[in-house]
Image 1 (cartoon, rainbow, N blue to C red):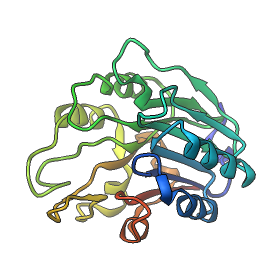
Image 2 (image 1 turned 30 degrees about the vertical axis):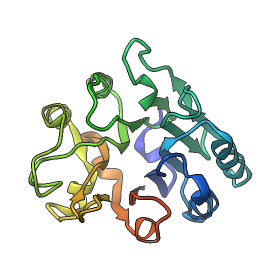
Image 3 (image 1 turned 90 degrees about the horizontal axis):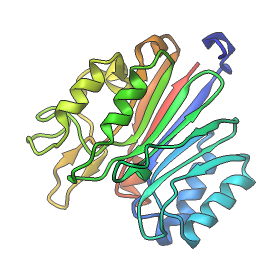
Image 4 (image 1 turned 90 degrees about the vertical axis):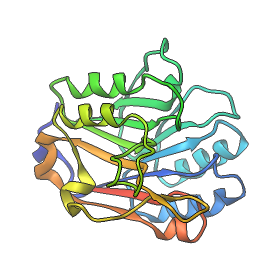
Amino acid sequence: MCSYSDLIEAMKIVSWNIQQGGGRRAPAIVQYLTTARAHILVLSEFRNNATGVMIRKRLLDHGFSHQAASDLTKDKNGVLIASKYAFELDRPRQELEYAYGVLQCRFAAFHLIGAYLPHKKKHRLFEILLASAAQNQPLIIAGDLNTGHNFVDQKGDSFWYTKELDQLESSAMIDAFRHCHGQAKEYSWYSHGGNGFRYDHTYVKAEMLPVVKECFYDHQVRENKLSDHSAMVLKLG
């Protein structure tokens, strides 16, 4: 495995829930992704349908020649990882329900998990995240976890899986946004009533903090209705 000094001078990872596969918004979504100067993309609520095929082909045309998507039917939401750098895919634990919501892959310098955890449904997918975090390896977890800290990542207390999130943070996984911005109040999704929720997260293993340069939300894509979620950007260097 390469050392951190072997990382390229600047690496940008964009994770984004594209809302039900993108639909008619897909051309605008692709336009954003191909001009974001990203090296790795993690798309949640990706669907293996005709729109998904178009997205993948367009990304391929723009240099994202290494791709992996959840193995699922065209009407279900999963994850797509598209990269300009090669990676090896680790198969998820198929015995777990909703296993297609987690994609695990290995790059030269770190492991990456792209996640779309189902909203307010019983699942055990945090077991996969916790097992990966327990291994002696650099790790990034990025995507829509559909949870957060009550009264911090939302005004109320309706989040599920907060105990599991605490366990993840106790296993040397650091919330990259909080590392860069402290207790700033930002939300990646809003209800019709205007209530904000920080559902989308990027976690990095503590040993990777020296190479974390920036982590922030791009709210413009949500405000311009390309999706109902803001995109998240992690910059390493």
